[in-house]
Length: 609
Image (cartoon, rainbow, N blue to C red; front, side, top):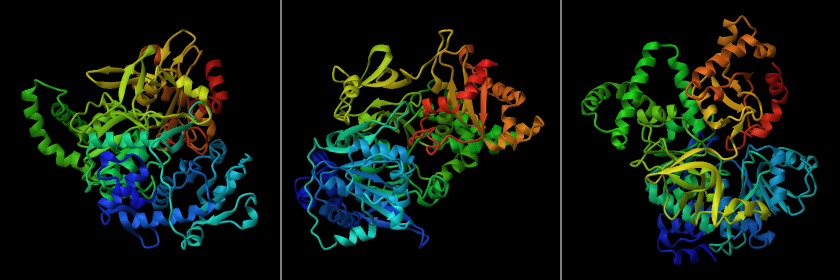
């Protein structure tokens, strides 16, 4: 089915059934409106592209795919950074009735090779031929792979494996420019993506998401957030992340809103100031970093810290009243209004300006946001709404709305999605957004469903229609004394202090809880100096005095936990846990099995002491 044919039968969003129809419908609705904005390094400025211009580029990609004569439903692996190339490739794949396999551009080569092999990908588009060489060097057989296209060629052809032809993207597009762009589009039950889970506890699993799954979820999110054509999204989460695909990519298409692609996470603060987004799709880590920088600055001035904390407390009460979470304090409300006249321009407006000054929705998902950080940002006017979802649910299950926001919860289930509490307080989900199953894993698929409901693996409660996440069913540490502790809650409490950049709690079948923490370098210089240790000597991190000082700080942060849940020992490190060293997933979750192996000798020493 051609794009023009799709638009003829798609009068409005409610009738859209596939992602190919969604894009074609949007182009027909607002062809000249700004669709995407991308920074051009050569010119040193932001370049805009309309929906019509984007569609013309997509047509070029459709033409270039046609000589391969791939079967309907063939898997196309996309290993690109966020940007116009990634969008055009994805849209062309959808229009042709193929299945995109989005992968994280920073994932390690062995993991990428595994996904290419498992998905039987027939085609790969990557950032560079050097990246492809590293993937091929993983040693996995890729018999289905027919062609590799790269944005940049950095190596001589002799340095690349000869088994698969590699071509630069401009050459690839030019070679098919004379062809007709014919594409047989998908139907609603076809796969819209094969998205691999982050593999926190084992090999990644391919989640089969249909067009019905994704399109129904996009419509449900539109209903809750109500984005408009004048909105500007800033995209920085990888498009391999289902959260970003639905909320930061397909949702703006449905709304006709513009997406600006951030240059990098490192340049995100500058991009926020230049793009001035109205909607931000983020994970807690971004807010944690901003909060950490603020806390470090405040540590130098007690007066500034007191003013900042007063602004948070005042702003939080104002927010709670607006949301109906706080009632019956008329006199305090009057004083808060008077205080806010001073505190808003002095404190709150400065923080809002760091985000560009016109944010109307900041969605936080992918992991829990700590109460301290949530209260800080909401109190100072950053409109964060938390939500809950998973790759298997395309991904949104529930989230708060700006005018119905209880940050102690992840909000209400979205339209047409049902939630219930099963055995062991497990949250279970049913709806049109729930995946078909796991690719080539019938046994895993069967285990994930019970009576037609998806088992999320998360413990939750539902009160007044709002979902509150309590922890992971399996992510519970059981000590040798029989005590049960949720490690994520502990880790969040520890990272409320900016001196701890990352934290990992452990103690399964051990006599007590302990943790490994990544210290900020500024704090380590200060601590080692106060203890007379050499900060450059790795052995100093194993010093009993340093470990004792850190444990005391951690105990102060976790004093609200039962005594048996408070860590009694700590492993100190300055080396961050990254995707590259395989200690976190591309979505920034801890790979607990890998961390356990990485710190095996240190953990053994902890329990010998």
